[in-house]
Image (cartoon, rainbow, N blue to C red):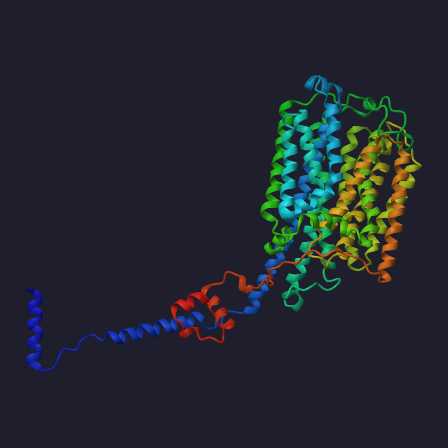
Length: 583
């Protein structure tokens, strides 16, 4: 009825006026709407007055540089925590297991000393074959995940101490031996790679960086020096924190030097072995089992923290395509790569220094600290000697920053000169036991040895980074370095029963041979003697250098970038589908 009434009214209007009614202009509305959409689209895709591309690019690369620094500090702190937990637990375990009363009361006829011998054998012998399996682990896992897996193995070693049995301690010790070389190879490569990335983010406008060409010679040396100094400054602190369990939980239970050194007749250069005549009871009271469980739980928590640091805070060392390309290397090549690197005379001539680096670091803890320090001052002063050594190494690692102004041989030869003088002095020094007055000379000796160790460790890593800075992957170079170190540690494990002067003579001869070989290497390089170096396949997929265009920009900025990069096309006239594809 209503429709009929409306129709009749319309007819009446037409009949009365003779003019049809004016209907709404929908076409005009559509044109206005299209104009509004085009205006919004032009605003969306047009240049923005407030957007400064150079400023955004500068901010982007500044964030990337901060990320690199964060990666270096995180890797350094993670490695420090791992070795603090490992060495602190191992030291406390060996002291407890050495005491005959603790063994008889706690574990009766379990044979803890025999278990400790096999455990040390697993830690020191297994890395000998590290040159064979380390490339495989790096091939499958990559640098970052290798560090994470190795820290997990160290956490496994801590967990096995909750239940001290042969079938828990020995397999975990073997796992530690397996992880030593891959962990150190990955850490050394990671720090050097971060230096390369930092250079790229500082010089992002250079053509060779944008096109991923080979870096100029000496381009990354400044960053390699700084980052390696930071890493070893943190790492030497692991020796300080490793003494916390002994000092805080076990120190009050230790016997004084009059008891532990009662049967000791000689110390220093005149002895054979570690401390002949050392008392087999070193504890006044046995530590409570609940207290040991609490200590192990604290160490376990820190081991998990190190795993989280490697997993969350350490960024990737390489682009995904580079990691994939490494996995594409065949089995034969991956086994041969470490040996092919030894064709380079630079690496061969540095091998004696690699061996000496393993000798001197372990001698400071097991040789000087025990045969001189504990033999003269007693077991209660062991923590102080190791803490001074760690603090000395941490502080003097920063001394290698002088390489920013001086030649690269200064730190390595300087550390060798310090150790040469100390070895000669130790060969002539045989203090008597139970002499607390020798505390000050002992501390001076250990601090100076820490100076030499810091210059040696930082010097070697810096020289390797300088020599191979143009290589994108240094995994295999650092694998050879730390494999020779592992061989040296195994030799020290075997020579424990030798006379002290024989040990010092081996150290001295190795040091002199190392300095001679290094001088030969530098002379050959000065004469521009060519060297052989295997090439690792480059990524098959080219990845452009990082750019602010890869940032998650706002739609307005994205639209502007699309118009800039595709200025030949008029996207304002394109269809919505084409525009969506372009954006």
